[in-house]
Length: 606
Ligand code: GCB
Image (cartoon, rainbow, N blue to C red):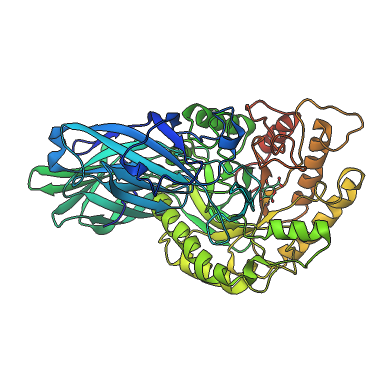
């Protein structure tokens, strides 16, 4: 069996040791490490923090912008008493791909930068001794990878990466690395689906184990009292007088699975479960049967020095700010976030639209060059053959892994399968027909599935929206178009487009709207980039949303300022944050707080 996607936890049958920390590090400047056997051990190394992006730690621009392989090494002690366990090394993520060797032997490789993966160590480690772990991480992107980008190679061999997306291509070991000791017969996967029947809650479940011993289940409440029990690998358990998982008011039960042989416990795994329902009914999204209104942000995993590396302090600060501002939801733009983020969202009752890393399915670079030089015509991402043969395979893998990892989180109420693909192209339709059909087979909870539509495929031009259960719009009327003195007209144009989308009868969420704003720049009367303009812009957008009954949510872009590739459109990053990169409020944060405190979670639009 491959990777179990269950989050590693210590129980009476399992052991987890976090081996993150300071590791040895080496940038493979001449791309020679694989041929020269660096897998056996690195020489002339420097130091690196794990987890973190490696980009913003050094003062050397060549390392920050490095395209290709970087190498990591550490030593791990494997206790003798683990001989009777299955011993795995588990990476929370490696962006965008990695190969792992232990004592010179390959134990696992993984494609895709935002998912956990693990390799089995039993046959390659010395028990009771130290063992050498070497990892190569590669950050190259092309038209077939998820996300997408392209590389330009200069004559001297230097590679420059051009991501087809608007965030810095942070790379490295971004999440914790752990050793996991599992019993030989263990719980491999759990899938739950919850329902509400009057005052009771129902959990339908399916469990996969690696053996044939009996399985029993205890359902514990938040006081750790057993409230229900069950047995068998598949079944249904009813909880009387259930406490529901509600936005802003989460209640989590523990679905505790034990593999037993008589009185002996072979394995023990606790899964947090929240009882809630999600459905789309006409132009509304119902959570626990009531029409929900999404208030919040598109976010990023981004902060100074750590880059995209998981940082528990920033994670907690972000939850504090989301609570302060009255947000009830976020979209994990533009990739799956750390498992610890999802766990916190479950605990805090934050509603999540969970996004794959399928971003950049738009031929930005070629179209930009064509526009600048007048040469050539628009090239279409979906006109490329390899997109329909290779990209689609990687895209499906990314969806499959995301659903495996996040399927049981009560916070996840919707799957966003791609951000701003070029759906103005005819050739995008058959591609996404396949993507949606595939994704629909994976979620037994049958949650709504969608993608974000971009402004170059407006109503009437988009070829893909029919497959989406909910329309997600990223719109910048008043910023990228009709900005400054045209703002009053921008609003009216937006209202008109919304009426078009409303005619589909589907619910609409404005999944991005925002204006770049330099914190501390004030101007009366306003000009673009000033704090005053950001607030006027937001008021205009909100008026448009309130004019359309089908709009059931607003997620401002972005929660905080974030780092991007350098260029003439960005001043040390994207500045559309309601908060600065160091998580302090701009004036707009107070405006949003005021508005969102006056919008109820439920039944905003009757
Ligand atoms: C978008 C993208 C997002 C960008 C944003 C912007 O539509 O989805 O990644 O950062 O626009 O600020 O331009």
